[in-house]
Each structure stands twice: as structure tokens, then as C-alpha cells.
Image 1 (spheres, rainbow, N blue to C red):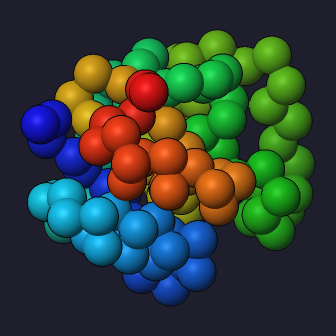
Image 2 (cartoon, rainbow, N blue to C red):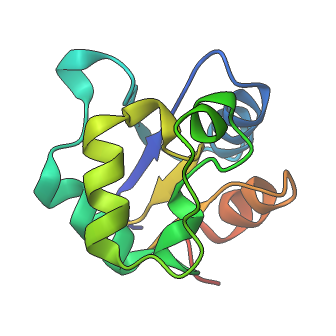
Length: 125
């Protein structure tokens, strides 16, 4: 079975739902509370996440967030470098939850996705 890491925000209901689905299915999940300074992702980790993300790298940004709007960001068409630079400056804009199975990463939205993870035990089915 693959090693599963969940980029988790315990204050986000969708993130909590994802963690519950994975643990209830019996998976051992390493939790990474990426908003804590001690657990933030560095540049290499963010780049790896964006390169392995199922979808566009821009999907890693929470674009409906007030901070995104306040910063005047418009990320359509951004490449990995722009996404990584933004997330280094503004870690709270990292979409969540994100599951990393060591090979691929996927955002846990819509809420049905974590059930798919739990069943498969990995990102890609």
C-alpha cells in the first residue's frame, strides 16, 4: 500500500471529511498541517506538489478566498513558477485538502473525492 500524506487544515470541514474517510477505511495517513509555520511546505515541496497535481497547477490555489481577491490575483494561465512563488508568500492560499500518495497529488474537492481515495488507497484509481 502506498504512503499517504494529507495536507490538512483541521478548521476546514472538507479537510476533516477527507481525513475521516481515509482513516475510517483503515488507511494510515501522515497529517501535514501546512498552515503551521513548522509544517509549511518549502519551495521544492511546493514545486513537486504542483508538478504531480492531477489537474492544472493553478488548481492548487484557493481562488475564491478573500485574500486572493484582496491581492488582486488573476491566476488563469499561470505556470508552476508563478503558483509556487504565490504559495511561498501566501501559504493560506493552498487549496485543501490535498492527498499525496508519493506519485501523484490530488485536491479533495468535490467532497466525493476523499471517498474515492479511501476506496483506492491512493490518488489515481
